[in-house]
Length: 296
Length: 311
Image (cartoon, rainbow over the protein chains, first blue to last red):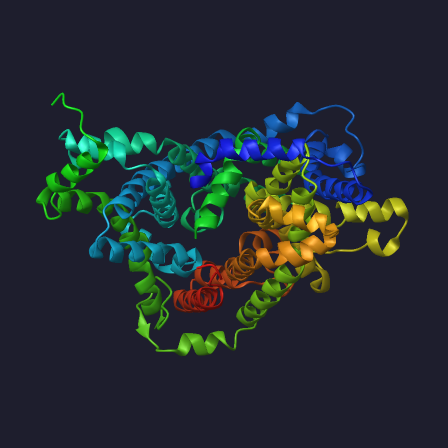
């Protein structure tokens, strides 16, 4: 997480590099062209649904790849009605918010303890939580489902975001731990001398200082919850509770390619929030993803 | 209190003021760790233990549980779908390491070595597919490989290549695995690229300048300096490829539902089918245990062979 703090240093580095740039060599041009071609390949599939969603069904059937004659907004409206996108968006939003609310506070508190209150007991507990980081979700699906049925949690949205949060907590505990470790200790100690208790130090000083980590966690937990497919597929059975991803996937299974333009429209709507978030915050998202990977 | 105290004294005083054993402190620690532990206990630790128990039972959820010992495992190793999934774990991991990692290394090196105004944008583009919902990634994959309207088929039609125009990539056992693999490469390589780039940017600039002074080409620099330096990063990514192939579910399930036949079956898909379509909990839990054991083995391998040299 130290990466977040060194953003300025990073910028300096890039500036320095730009100043020191040499003349363009032939290899450089060739490699850059190849890389741009790769990038085109990477970005090309994103154009497909836009191309399809703009067409009428007839147009798609005869010329799937021709440029659309006019932009059919109707597809988006039809898709909205057919898949009940309003309900899907609402469900997904509830899952995302619930997941954020249940992942971040426990992870932040636990991460703080593991960073600042080291003892033999907390060390053992830390390894206990670390285990969760290495457990593949697939392993626990069957008992999880059985338990949720027993608790009457299955087929509810909280029954989805609670386990989702549990699977995210180990990772974010690790991130918060390394973030709190990178913070200077002086401020907290000064407050303690002034008579502030553990809780006051945590809530008034440390948690506000951890804001960059929290913003990042909110962003990434949101994207993760928005994109989830496997857990929702298993835990939700009632159409009414379906999240966006389930709706889009089941739409394709139900209609195949007969309704492709509408389907593409639904897909665009369901992918839009993550893509927009990424376009706005890609520097942050990339840096945060790496912070998790590099520390471990 | 108005007296100015040197920082050291403050620190000493703080240490004296806060004795190690005080009830408030213990309570504070307890309440801070409690929520996280509660979540994990209910949704992770308990299900883990349950998985092992259920895997020795014959149960469908509705009927009573009957203890059958290792019978579920014995049946699994006679189950075509499971065995195909198990084979695919290894072939998927192998091809990811052989294809995705070198490709990512090349892209990352190109972007770092010839760093220019476009590098950051290109990096963002390469990682874009990683944050897409897998339902959408799979849909895009279908649009590339589908018969009748897929991109490849359309290209075949335009060029007049009959074999391409009439190809059914996802319906043909020979091509289905590779079709899913190509889409996965497109979707997942972004992570390796940004990870390699971050590592490459940490290589001291002096090394590159020294190499250039000695007249080393880009290729030579990549081979003799960057590649050894990224040794650890590459091994981490290799482990990620392996663990990722264990967990594989969304993409093959959404693109081909594991078919045709068992051509793209994975452990995740066979677990889902046994557990949540055929309602055979015992068998599904046994697959869960197999996934757990394999990921444990891979993780231990990472820790024994993956130690960083400078640690």
